[in-house]
Length: 508
Image 1 (spheres, one colour):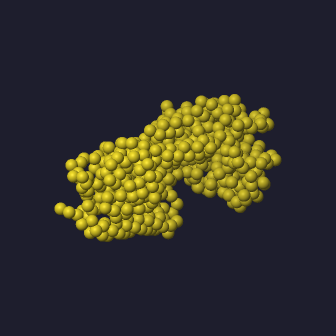
Image 2 (cartoon, helix red, strand yellow):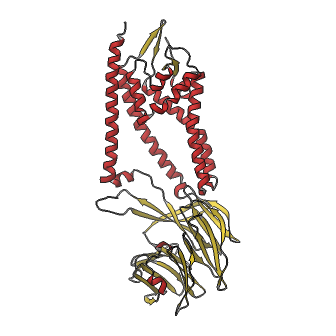
Image 3 (spheres, one colour):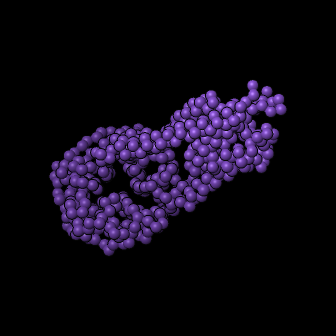
């Protein structure tokens, strides 16, 4: 039967207006819902995200190396209640580059290790763990933000901040208040996270930073000796064994970890360990008489041995952001989101098919235009095909090297990946459609690109239709969708400019 093209044009215009209205209302609803959740129920929104566990500390105990990790649960966060995120702490044993025997432990603020026990401190209590049993002691001698050191002679606990700083020695049930260095007691600009207590050669040593200065003080049981401060801007951490104190520090302007040692009553000159770049965190420990350093980057956690003031023998282990479980959670979230979108596109495609002219007849041949769903499926398959090889390569290279600690190399990788996706996508579609009329995705979906007179596409038309994806892609391809529904030959803007159409490959 003859087709009334004018009637079809009017129908297509109405359909395009309807699709535009649906798209705008849908996006408005989604954004309004997201903003509403963000402000009214942020915990529900954050609870959908798979936050990974982050390794915090490594602690030696009974010839085993324990790893303390933390997970943050944001599902209960609310602006109204101002509730802090719940934290789940875990303790596991590092064996063969994996963390095993993981157990959930109660929250704590800091820890100290002595002999065959680990001490975990929080406001008003401390717990001990000997590798098998837990014990808890409640005491007012442990105040807010406690930092501690322990040995066979007792536990030294430094608590409080600003005007309320106290230092107590706990031995059994006895608590002995101790004086503080005057400079420390009066300093109201102390960086609490930088405070370190270390026991070495029957003395208590205190390190802290304030106003870009680092202080070092020692207590011999009767008085404090405070050294001259040195300029310092980054993080500091100190540990000790029977021979020396190891003082690790990080520069702020150039993120490089350095090590200085204190022995025979004097400091040896600090030297760089050979680890530099972007660090999320790092922590030292002494295991079997040797210093170790755990460095956590954005996508890896690496354990180094320290020999001759250099970081050597790097060992990566599966924890934190590098966990496969975290990657799978992200992948499942992406897949689930795309499945919902696929269902929506499929239903929309059925709706459009009911009202648009599906075929075009010329020279005794009939061509069937490719539906929205087939074109969307072909584009998705092509995106996977384009991204898969470099994704595999970059993943193997990324997780197999330490370059992610270096900001310039990290930037260059991101820049190359972005450039590949832009240019690779354009060249892939342009050449395959220009020469063969179809990409691999289109071939799998049984559709082909032709000129609007149903002759071969050609390189020029293939280039024009793909360079115009920039315009069609606005608002998640809503512009291209409106153009397809509003034209007789199902043409998006790129097709109109290039003079092309997309049809089913089967002809009758």
